[in-house]
Image 1 (cartoon, rainbow, N blue to C red):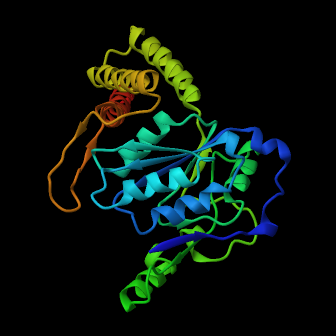
Image 2: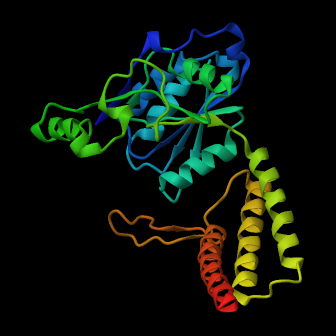
Amino acid sequence: MTTTHSPVEDALPTVSKTTEDVFVSIIMPCYNEERFIETALENLCNQYDKQNYEIIVVDGRSTDRTREVIKQFAEKRGDVSLRVIDNPDRAIPKALNLGVEAARGEFILRMDSHAAPSAGYVRRCVELLSKGEAAVVGMYCHVCPSNETVAARAIAAAVSHPFGIGDASYRLSQVQSQQAVDTVAFGSFRNNNGFFIALSCVALVVVAILLLRPKPRDPWRRVALGLLMAGVLGNLTDRLLHGHVIDFLLFNLHVRFADPWPAFNVADSCICIAVVCFMVYSFRDSRSRRDGIA
């Protein structure tokens, strides 16, 4: 299945010359994409000023000619900064994390090896992100069948219809104007790891103050705060050492659709359990208050 991005030329602002002064990183996970990878790279080459632009392909150790095709393309287009990163886990979330860690750009755009972005797609994403009005920017996505078989055309039709895709507006109709949406196909965003580091530091201070308060001493509250602090510390450590949050445990079941599955993040699990403990504490606290009044 092939995905194309609609130009939507009239809906988006013109690009100023200063826009291309911002360094941009494209992250493209792939695995066994010898049929599509060259076209995908070719579509990206002229999207932006090559001096401020890099394409990072995160390959899951493809067993076909994907690496060879990428190497040949890099030799042919030596004017484009193209890097290949190894992704032995073959998991897309892991691939994106590896790409973000390696990215040098102020802005990061996630792209797919099956996608064909319209002319000026990267420039328009950068223009909109530079305005600071949205955290994530994307475009309308038109799904085309990869061949003319009945199955391929049926799948393309299903994922472009409300019955098959729900209310994902980026797939339902041609976008005529900019609008706020719940999600986009291939998001572009700022590489703002520093913001989350600062936010984590603030959260640590707040949790520490709450733990040091003498009252109340409910065990559920103290367990919740302890787990919350552990989770924040874990994610903060990841961001300081790796530039992003990583998965601590990754189970590879060596079966289809579970290679690997699932990715388990200990820090985020601590935060989720802390939320449950806080809920239990709030119910216990409200009950004790009612009993006290009675």
